[in-house]
Length: 138
Image 1 (cartoon, helix red, strand yellow):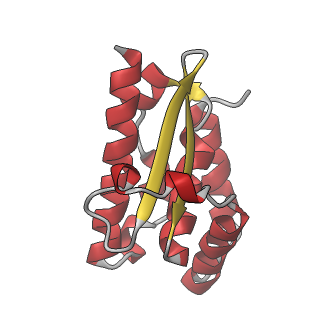
Image 2 (cartoon, helix red, strand yellow; image 1 turned 90 degrees about the horizontal axis):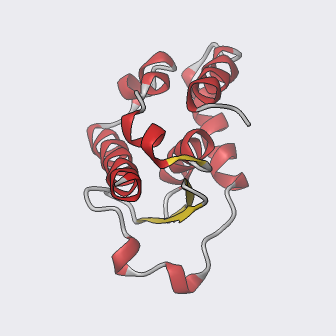
């Protein structure tokens, strides 16, 4: 199984295939479309990520000392962003997720190309994932 660092590097390489940011946005949208929808019973207020402009539901559980993520969003870009985070962090040891650097976000240029509200949402998603990872690694 690939490590968090290897998964981040793979995403960076995928984004390097695109020269234009519109193509990168389209790729993020495609990632969001490929994310399985969360069952309606998991789309409750307890799972909403605070600080996101759109509704993003994040379900986190622990299996065999690993963090398993599933999510959904009512906006396609937000869904694509959370899909990237799931790609990198799901099915990884909780302790490693808690201490992971988010190198890929800057390396692909995502932080510089999001609106301030989307950037805040991204930060909120990361904080929520790390919060659960810390709790599960304790």
